[in-house]
Each structure stands twice: as structure tokens, then as C-alpha cells.
Amino acid sequence: MIKLNKVSKVFAMDAGNYTALKENDLHIKRGEFIAIMGPSGSGKSTLLQLIGGLDLPTSGEVTVDGVQLNGLNERERTLFRRTKVGFVFQNYQLLPMMTVAENVGLSLSANKAPSSEIAKRVNQLLQDVNLEGKASQFPSQLSGGQQQRVAIARALAMKPHLILADEPTGNLDQTNGEGILKLLSRLNKEEGITVVMVTHDRKAAQTADRIIMIQDGEVVPGGGSRS
Ligand SMILES: Nc1ncnc2c1ncn2[C@@H]1O[C@H](COP(=O)(O)OP(=O)(O)OP(=O)(O)O)[C@@H](O)[C@H]1O
Image (cartoon, rainbow, N blue to C red; front, top):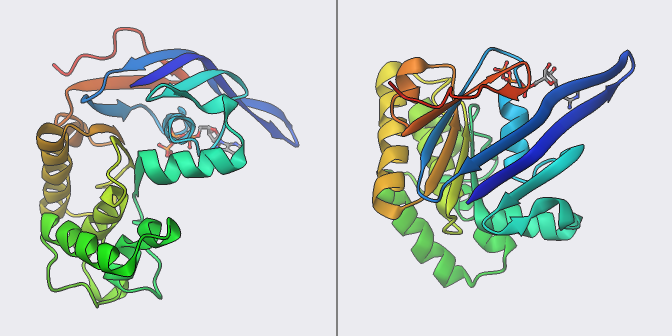
């Protein structure tokens, strides 16, 4: 599903180059639920961005679902992100001027789906995340946990095989956080969606099948056991 071959990411800074990821090899199988852990600044979010095609490696190859991301042009990469990957972020990243339904249907309307189809799918997605009845509210009218469920519904709109979640429970209290982890776990187990989740929270990481540890830009060999 996901293959990294000698992937490095170097950021050019005024003070010189900064190597955020160093020659990482990684293999994540279809249907796995992976937690990525490691100290602040170790490269977790950078890794997730490369897997999701939000950024490109400085060297090495990232392959997702058989697609070599380095080989895509900007337009193809946008299409890849929109159709193949569901992104979930710590701060939800919902559009505040749009209703819940509009947020969830965003990628469907960007892909020019007919409005009757969008309405039907959005309804189904809101049911799936237990937010029926919130369709015409605005994000600011919802709790953090509810907003994150909207973000997950939005991420699922294009039926991706892969969800990339960066600290999805980072802004939530324990109960809401557990609700989000249960939802991700259900999507993984019941729908077979591969989930890669960055987290600082050891307890949240226990939801995953495997933990990948990163330190100083390098995946720690053998750091992948949950127990
Ligand atoms: N666009 C950028 N330009 C320059 N440096 C960057 C950029 N993005 C990330 N970095 C640097 O790369 C390193 C890794 O950042 P990254 O966000 O991947 O870490 P992280 O492990 O996700 O950290 P945290 O747990 O604090 O979110 C950091 O030192 C960061 O400052």
C-alpha cells in the first residue's frame, strides 16, 4: 500500500539546509492501522505529508497504492490527494463559512458530482459519524469532537483506501478523543481503510496494530511493536 524507498526531506533555510527526514525505508500494508510516534520535531508530520502527496521528498521514492508520487505533476498530485487520501488534522481544518454538509461535500462538488448525489452521500456520511441533524449548522456551533467527526466524514467522501490523521485527538478531551479513535478503528476494521495516525499519546497509539517510532528524522528499526 505504502512504500518509502530511501526517502529524505531537506528544507532549505537561511541558516543552511535542515534535514527533517533521512533515507527512510518503510512498508505499510493495505488494511494496517499504524501509529507514528516520536519526539517533537522528529519528522512525523513531514512523513505524513510526503505519504499524502502534500509535499515531495528531496530524494527517494514514495509509492502509494502503486502510484509513484514523485512521478506526478502538480495537477495529478492534487487529483491523487482528492481521490485516494482522506486527511484529518488536529485543528479539523473545516471551512468556517460553510455548513457541515457543505464541508463534507467539498471534494464531491470539486469533482463536479451531481447535487442530488452529493446530498445523498453527505447524508450517509453524517449518519456514519453520528451527526445526523447537524447538516445545516456551522463548525463554530459544534463541539471539538463533533467538528473532528465532520472532518472524518469529509475525509471519507471520496471513499479513500487511506486515511492520514495528524494528531486527530490532540485538541480533544479524553471522551471525545476515545470516540474519534473508535471511529477510526471501525473504519479500519469494517471498511478495510488503511489508517496512518501521528500521535503523541501512547494510549491513543495502542489503538493501532503497529507503532512506528521516529527519532531525529529516522524510523527507529524494530520500533514497530505495540507491546
Ligand atoms: N516547511 C518547513 N520548512 C523548514 N523546516 C521545516 C518545515 N516543516 C518542518 N520543518 C522542520 O522539520 C522538522 C520536523 O518537523 P515535523 O513537523 O515533521 O515534526 P513533528 O515530529 O511532526 O513535530 P511535532 O510533534 O512537534 O508536531 C522540524 O525541525 C521542523 O522545524
